Every structure is written in structure tokens, then in C-alpha cells.
Amino acid sequence: MRRVLALALACAFAASAQAADIFTVTPELWDRPRTARAVREQLAVKQALALHLAQPGSRLVIHHGYGQDPLVQAEELRAWLMALAIDGARISLVNDVKAHQSLNIEVVK
Picture 1 (cartoon, rainbow, N blue to C red):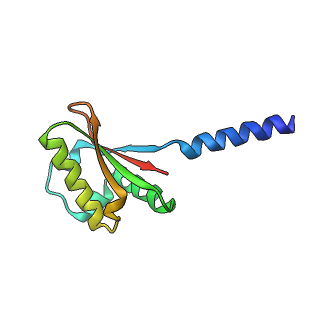
Picture 2 (picture 1 turned 120 degrees about the horizontal axis):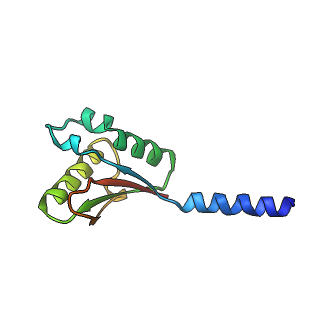
């Protein structure tokens, strides 16, 4: 019984260690001029940064939609994260979000 329980716990831990955490950036961030403070206090950014900084070696992936506006938003978010002292080499942009959906920040362990 102990072996089964230990195996189940090990499998659950391994699955959670491989799972990525994704945070959705609300469209309100883009409705007004941005400042470092406004970006840093956005809930998705705050949560993603806290998790990223707590896990050395993790990477951030910004998922955005196709087209110029979503790409510009993703690049701007990347620039703000770099201004907040996140290494730009650890931030990737991926255009895999459907049209009219919000940006997502993924923390990859």
C-alpha cells in the first residue's frame, strides 16, 4: 500500500512539475497609456513574474494572436518585462492565440 501511495505521489509531482502555468493579460491594459507601475500591477503580469522569479531557470512565453496589433502588444509587453529587469533572452513570443483573444504569459519550468 505504501508503494502504491508513494508511486501515486511521485507521478502527481512529476505531472505538476511539467505543467506550465498560463496567465491571461486583460485587454484593459491596452486601453490606456502604460507605465512600468501599471504593467507590474496587472494581475497576470504580477502572478507570472512571481512564479518566474521563484523558479530559477524558468522562461516566459508570451502567446499572442496573428496580425499587427497583437504582435505589437506582445513586443511591447516583452519590452516592459525587460524594463522590469527580466532577461530578454528568457522571453519568447509565440503567435498561436486565436483572433480577438487576450495575450497569455506562460511560465515554462
